[in-house]
Length: 342
Length: 120
View (cartoon, chains in turn green, yellow):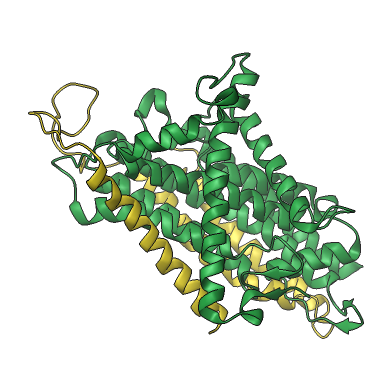
């Protein structure tokens, strides 16, 4: 059974270690993902990508960060001041908390909460609110259009996302009954992220084998939730300039960017936990497997982005409500039936 | 300290980190202000009116359907947790099926009303 930092350390020390760890991992991830995104897109389009700063452009992201840090923050005249200034923080703060919930290792975790899965979805919901605050508060037509689209799209795709996660919760409950680990009977809770991995580890099978439909829908819904192509119409740069963050410059923009890449990271990590066995894997230590799987998923997200064109907005919503939601409801019903029948 | 207190602390620290990142550039960045620096961006032309105007009602309809849907789906989580209790047997499946069928009726209704087909 994984223990938590709180079990081993003084609470203040535990929080400090955890927060520095989370911030380090998230910052590294954003730096790495920006560089990877540029290199992957360049590779797919037969370009070189960043080459000038550092060896093969590895220091490009640092240069960009320094530039963003020294940019002037421009607050346009017409904005709704409190909402406009709060929006980046509302988008940023939940990301840190959501990252702390992820079980990346079977040893010591930052937190091991029984309703972890629900909490991750909850923190994801805050991002929607922050995006809407940004779009509305900016008093800019592009920003408002982007925010409206983003909210409609995010809330719609949240339903298949949660429904496909629910079929995994059902399976965990059924397969975890009477689970014995190291001679100890363990009470498994389906919404505890660490328990989901434990059940997969113990049954020696990843849930993608039992739940391929749910895995596919979850992955596509994650793309939509993180506003990535083919679902990136909230910030479709060819029609909406930059969408909801049009009026945000310098570090304010950087915070939105940070949160966006971190959300992508968290989405990939949750998918790893739910469908790809989390830290489970032979020979190599758990965290290496975990982050390997996560980054493979992130690579697929980038691959999709640079391969498919963007959907039109009504197509996007129709796709969600008339294809993904009915399929995921059916999938849930079939899962429930099979569990009772077996 | 419970894990929930810890989680709340993380949210608080997230706010602090965000605030630091937002305040830091004030000491590092230039302060230039021209005639049009603070205009709302509209691709170079002068800003025309406010953005706070009436907006397509379709978005609102989706939000309505969502509110009805999402809350109900959250109720499925506690059901899913105890779904496999042997005491419930097939009754659990029948109940979850009835619940989902009623939920699906909501989609069918919205579909018939033309919400999903994005009718103007």
